[in-house]
Image (tube, rainbow, N blue to C red):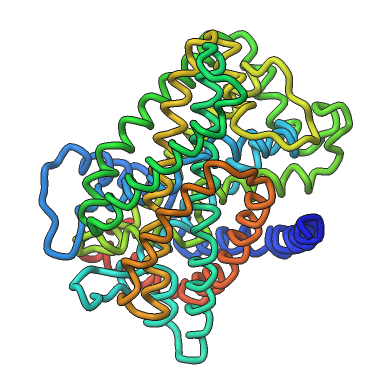
Length: 466
């Protein structure tokens, strides 16, 4: 039965992430970029000043909302996760070094896509029965498009509810237990016979902690993520930069393998990866899996911000993709290509490949720090996706089952800690691709509204460069 499900999912995944998906993802990103006059480049400086500047401001959110910085931290909590570590490793192993180039291209266009998602989510959001701001793709479909498009909103929300249990929880917990187990085994503190028991205890503890955060509401989620996300990002960036500095002499060769390998992957993978499209597909799909530009999920968190200007909150979308993919994913790629002793192309790889790059550079002691980083990344992703799941379910049936959903979502951490999740990773990848379809259609149809909002914001700022 498992073999049949695996085969069906593989076929469906090939279709979802095939040529039509690449055309839709890159095409909509390019369309939005052209219509906004490449706002992600034209206003990059403004976006950085607007976002980084807010990090150092102390401010309290209005009732039913979070601060703009808490909103971006909640979104980053979901995006800066195992996709940055395991996802990049898988892209390189299956697509060659050139997959990194296509990851960068998807991020360049994705900065505009996510800007559009966040801007529209804030513009079309609404208050729920508890007085909280709610928004996201399902709401800008509902409030921005005609009634005959509403089915897209419900389709998106339904796929979101199904996806969060795998993408947002079980696979993340599995990464936490794997990283803890690797660190303990490197120091001889964990025997093979004890692995199951330790994993079970870790799963139970995670379930309790997730429930405590999620049941506290959107404000507690915001306060939690604004403390955890900066800590884990700084820790990982320091470790990644160290790998580059210690292997600085090999950087030119790695850059060549990325740029040349993007178009002729066979020369850098021993012929194992021979297709440009395979390299492109792996890079784009894993880039989106990491930064979620095109999925629309991050805009759900941004919609809870108390900011008045949709465009200014949209700048956080540009900042978010830049940090997630251009910085964190790039550091992961260089850690693998510079530090990993062996890369077996054509074979699925995950976090263990990234960890090997760190360990080979620093020694076994660094496995403790990588375990901490992985745990922070994965746990923050669980929290962020928990909020997404609640909002998607609330859109379909209302808020009366929110508490039940959050308890069930938290409990998924237990089986996630003790079972093999290879199939679930594949299903999660397929569901992510399916979520992107209704969202990208909506973004294309609402591109005129986006341009109007950009012009209105420019007029309000007396910006003659619009």
